[in-house]
Length: 124
Image (tube, rainbow, N blue to C red; front, top):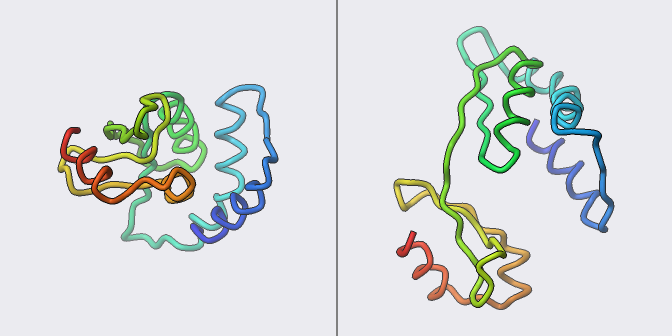
């Protein structure tokens, strides 16, 4: 399932934009793309959970969960921002201050060093 989504996203790195009428339409499209994978990879003893993040992701996750008939919840990670540009997110960190996701392409492009990232994580 994840590999199919990553494959789809990798094809969009050329700057291609898919524009949807609204977030609900985007969510139902996403759910349709992943539905068969979710059903094929789950068994009777496992549960599927759709997680959303603020700024649009909660709405999308809610509608994906509704279409997939699975559980829904949301998380509130902290933003890790680029040096000298607080509007540019370079990653996210969870409340446990250990779990994080970094956007390696931005970090590499801006040549952000590990020391800055560690300090940014510490300050969140």
